[in-house]
Length: 166
Figure 1 (tube, helix red, strand yellow):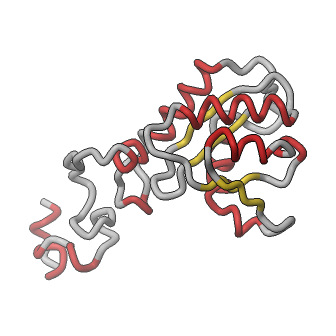
Figure 2: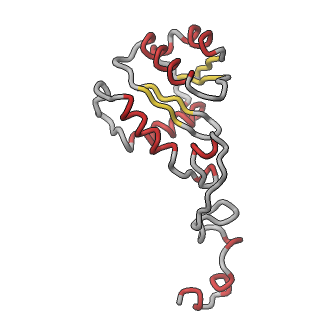
């Protein structure tokens, strides 16, 4: 499976590949990224053999491909976080051979419509498409959940009176 993640919003695009190889990865990555409405400037790829044809990917998308230093997972934090989120839907030892594009789209939609703390509880879909923020009553104006932000607690809660809990 090929996973492309937009760094600023965290928007995920997924696509199945029949087997891991440079040509299959090139085709699927190109197909996924050409659908995007924003231009792709840079790509940070894994160091595996599936990205051996990165020069052709750069030419097809008019972008630059970077590789992280081996064994430096902190250089690929967005990728590592996304892999953890994907594991909620595709646990280890899940056979990805029979994964369809429809299933990949369903997983991506679930991830892209899931509020994120780092986005102020906006979804990656809302941030990427610059949509207006819908009201979320459980989020304080400072972007934290109510109860976790000392600046935005209700007066009765702050003063210690029990009237707030009645």
